Length: 166
Length: 274
Image (tube, rainbow over all chains, first blue to last red; front, side, top):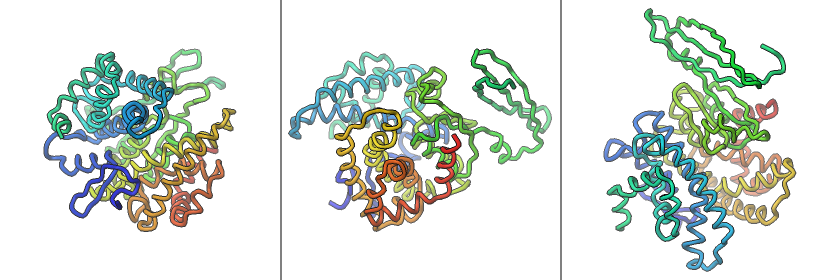
């Protein structure tokens, strides 16, 4: 399949144009359709800067430990390798420290980038859904008051519910 | 100013809406000594020009962190490419300054860099780079992060590839091969082998891409290429891994081109004088 040279999903095709890397795809569509639906990038350059900041935080700080948890707790047996218990414990600890920073941020701000739902919050939906579901670590969200409220808010958006039904 | 006392300062400048049509800038410089006493000095500066460029020249852009840090140098390279003046504020990681309360206010994860300009405080180097390009679209290198949506998406795609595929293995190798020896930390041969193999697979993909395209995102040098400079530079110059790049014809060509850029060489000079 020549569509994605790293051999991963997703890939989109928009007419003749092919694009991969999920965070590049969501940026592209948010800009392309800026004037319709929810404005996921903020209204000013500064708001956009904060969206980018928290999108990078998701990518660099949140994603690596939660990806390890997903791989080893959910998929190890399916993919045929032994789950690394030490890595699971270390990843949970790292993720906990990241969520502590989120707790502090969300005690001062309704959403990550400010008082508006943005790409930065959206980017957390898929793996957090795994965390509270099949990974079995919902307590990590519920034990943090503001993270918990934020999770309830963003996961109850009609758009996310539609995704879960697909 | 007394000799031998360490200064930490934060400068804030603000414009007072004047009674008369002259902008008046007041800079308040707070000085804090090691013993924690404060002295306030007022320097009234009157500027006659209301030109935006003058305001921009006065407005401070600050980057916090050591230039040796890969993420800090990513931001510095972008600022120099964009011809945006900045002040580099040192942060001693050896002394744990990045984990102290003052710094955590700027960067709650205790990582470098942190960034400030006249309207925002930001962290995460790739977010800062994007912001700089959006805020100063007409300054310096205007092709770094193009306005055209398809061109921009291509840059974002390869910036993400750098972030998700190139950075993890190259970051481990930079730490293991360039920093661990300096910090007297024992190297992990298994991690080195694993990440070398991963990096080779990524560079095989790059080799194919760069046989079709002069730079990663297209015909022009962009943020996507720039983002690779810090890790790749340590691997080639310090860790002796030039062969990994040089043995691939197109990757080698690309590396020669991007590492020879004036802005990157200025970052390296900053490191020597830090």
